[in-house]
Image 1 (tube, rainbow, N blue to C red):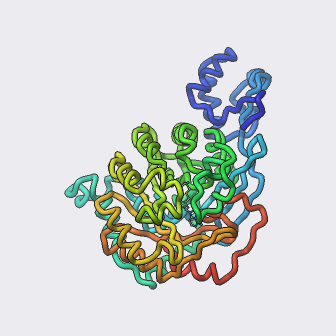
Image 2: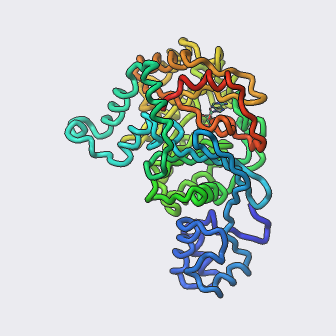
Image 3: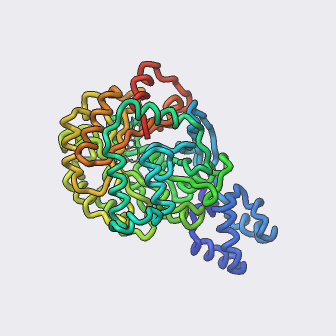
Length: 435
Ligand code: SAH
């Protein structure tokens, strides 16, 4: 991330900052001041760390220390309030980071029905009064999620939810979500994803991952924990192919920036050995798995990594994953018209997930140039969802966010010129949307 002669503070943890402070011969309490300045105040320059004496700041600068803040190079604002940021690092590489004032339609506190439930349990896990006590603590939220989520939805339900979701969200309402990238590009080669077309350029450092969050918080003038911010590692890249940096970044986001673990979700395409490792981490976000197909033949066609880590291996890892109280695994399923969206596919998916503490987020394909699939109709998406729900699997349809600025799932490709999608494509997606 940096020229060889500089060393950024952003990305260092408490111990590393303490070591740096002692190396330059300053008293140890300076470490906390630096930690606060970098992660809480989110300064961009050493000069701004007013708690440090000038002479100490100069000494740091002379030894090549910088803040290493990420720089917002471009910013695209969608009609729905979503903002896509192009964020640049010292070597000129850039990634995309997305701000969704109303969430992404599926994770804690994002304003969707799934998110609202998650939010309730995240914020006030014991408030579910006498019923919660009567039932096991562990199963009550899941039972509630199921009750809520397995009811058949009508078009009217969906329309009214759409109406409600038109209101502009505010950070303080607990709905805002930041979607961050973990790599420049991606190596996984999912056939329906625009990021895959870039290939992978390099991993991001922990500081670059955290730097995206700091830059967006600053630009949006919000600050956790006062403002409830949710975070999803669902931008460019495969977090589990940049595992060490991702894990360190998650820890810094909790300990430094002050975002709660339960407000973060990481999504993986299915790097099975890392799912096992992740289950053993002491600080870890919630887990989402991009499923996208219920059998090996289809999944391998859509996601070539399935050859190496088959569905059997993936599902074994999911079943063994040590879920915490009130936690479930999210499975994402991108619906591709006529490819993986048949009633048979839905039944097979329900069978595959039977007995797992999980929910499914359905995402109708977000189209893009070079992507050879079509977006299924609203009816088809609803039919898929209903089959899952009738089989007892909580299933939600994610509303696409920021599609007009190429900020939606699978559209992150560092697109600088924003093309407007043809109207019919947009219309075919929107009636199916709900949280
Ligand atoms: N590499 C990780 C993190 C990226 S998350 C992963 O694959 O999980 C991005 C999510 O968007 C994934 O669930 C992916 O399946 C989905 N996605 C990719 N391309 C898409 C597209 N064109 N339309 C809708 N969703 C897409």
